[in-house]
Image 1 (cartoon, rainbow, N blue to C red):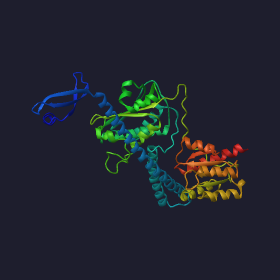
Image 2 (cartoon, helix red, strand yellow):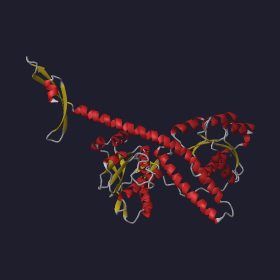
Image 3 (tube, rainbow, N blue to C red):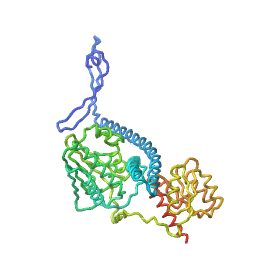
Image 4 (tube, one colour):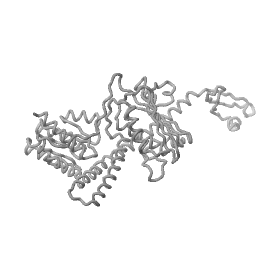
Length: 464
């Protein structure tokens, strides 16, 4: 290069990486130009030196931002695809589980057939749980955030885990005197803890080890926030103290390539058939949905530590008590028995199943897979219907459009819209359309029918 730059009189640009005595790295750029003498050969040279450290740091930051943007776009695209597929599977699995429950209630069923039905139900529930994980990753599962105490959630999850973990794994829960109150979905936070514990169990590779949960509150200091973009964003949204859940293990740890891909959906280091690669993806999706941040530290043979930071609830906000695990009674009151429901859903299998389940509860059901046919039924006798339940996402008219058409026929008729994905936009649009309630199209069809039943009972009571 020296010959090319000097002997041929061509300008030469070089960049140097230097390390100062204090350890700081600086970058210099040199531009040198050679000038000929009387014999035509290089006789003198002018060299210009420029400190380009700031530019190098800016270029590195730009490259990092571009990489994060590409990663975010990839995760969003995969999440959209996975969410759409999972939504369709939701209906299929709901139909399977619902018909299993109907079949199990047949009198005099053969014990061998009953055993087969139980196996179908177990497989269906495993598939349902997998779909829930996909929906959580893609943020298509509704998040019901309310003020909750973080420590009891972690302790309850730890009790469940201790019953499942092998004896060689020791599980500990540590906390300081404070019990932080966070705005969170209790079930989803438990899912985070269980998924991280499963990841730690896998990291032990069959050896003895320890998993530790730690709950406390911290202030995101300037140094930590500066080195972690996720923490910097959290500190900007929620300055001051935040809750921290630390999950650490003594497993084999992760190398840099694994760390770079650990939150990718369907990426797994487990052997074929041992994992779906969704556990950490679900954790990432839930933390993002809770406006939190997650930081991971790990090295091969030195274990792994996950730090999850969550914003605290407003000062003075009291935690909501945990809902009772018992289901409400399903017996119909005399005022509800025999009432007429107009049910609309484009999924024929689900339409048949929900109709049978509602009829088994003593309700009259007019079921339609076509929106226009359902509206014609209502026009024929508007006062014969007590409640309309319609799916939201259907070909042709959406559930909101159906509700607006119903208001033109009978303005006082209560309409309920069921959807597998509920957000603030849908709730606002439903309110404008005069819809009484937007309910989650639950995978457990029995629960879904029970909810419809209770909504009808409430409407009847309010109408008195």
